[in-house]
Length: 244
Image 1: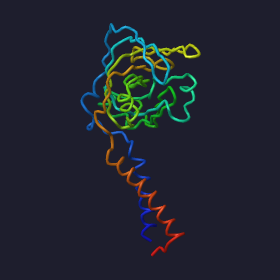
Image 2: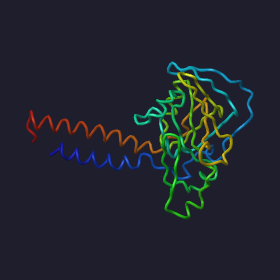
Image 3: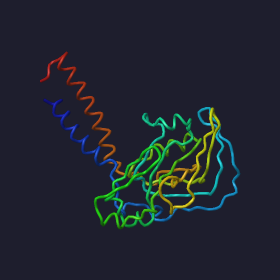
């Protein structure tokens, strides 16, 4: 009976915490840095080469770039179903983070918007006409994040929906010639939409300003372990012992 109660109880907590762990925080919980526009400036950094996973890339910085934002959706390039990055032999692009900032962060309309990410695109939609009218279509960006630094890559890949993140580096173009010519560019304005509107950022710094929903994330982890162990112990007792 004890194990059955643990199984059903942990399953219930798991379901609720799964739903709550990536919810978007209200504006009152956002850092002041998220309320401002990204900073884009001229740069004189010359093109450079870097090697990741045995492939040499040429990176050409276009502008210096600094952004703080709320992560509303993401896509890791090494996820199992992403065959395009594998086919392109693109290991420099570690993750894509879709973020909002500025007026969108201040107004909080993002909480009534549904966000999702594909291999190269961030989508948003809403059934609320009020939220849609209040949402600034230009205060959101899908960022293709590049790095050859394992520590920075870990921060970027570990970022979750609901986290507030800051990264600094360069809007950049990059390419390689490993078996075939590969090239990827970047948007240089926040006012564009559609194909080519994503920012490609070579990150030199990255940090999580504030994690979202740490309590629910901990509850999800604990409930997962509790559920798994409870099922194993229940099965063990069912086959090899006596359940009192």
